[in-house]
Length: 263
Image (cartoon, rainbow, N blue to C red; front, side):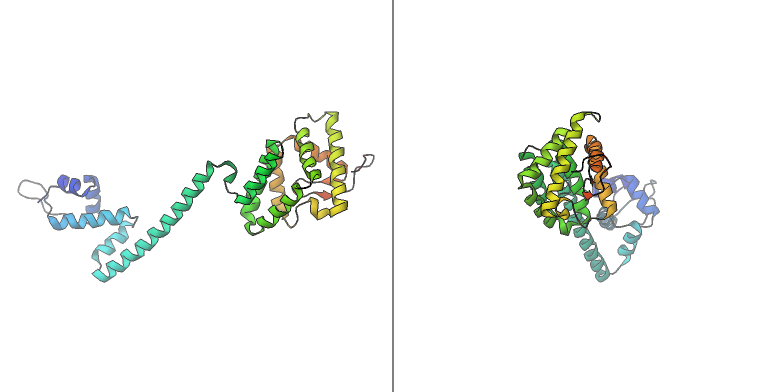
């Protein structure tokens, strides 16, 4: 016969837990002996072990009470259901572990491998890291929103960066990032970019220079991410709009500002 402290120690729970199980009606509370102590027998040990195991498995105490009163077949079926749930939780936690591990991988956060390879290619071409980050930040919501279309978009991006002129676009943009808003050179760079975009659009079509089939709210979100990452780009886009092009994620032709030489 065990005291409550000995019972708790033997099973690996606290005395407070034993008393809580008493209060919830899970574990019968024995009468006190002549010395004033409650004594627990082997049956109480087994019952407390069952309670502890079920509770540690995440079974609500109300459900624990039902299981303790169930017959052998019902109890076995319920335990099988609990095991299925635990396996599902284990798989979900494993996915969480994989996502956490990807946090240490930089661009791998929320991005498929083909996008990571594309970003690495931009770096290898000498594109400013701020632009690479802006591209990355745009790909994250894009890949989350339309994962099935990522391979198509990445394939087109890879084709585009095989064109030295598009690489020139990125390099020109890189030079523009450190220019103050009133720097005359920024205007010259806007002229160069507008001319480049116009030439590409005339040769390959306007769909080639701007992302297509992306909903307007997502375009706005991606543009905002880009401007937050590369603030000088906002001024450059304003200058481009005066020259007949607007947008960052989705470039579109617009009427140039009167008196400003279009691209």
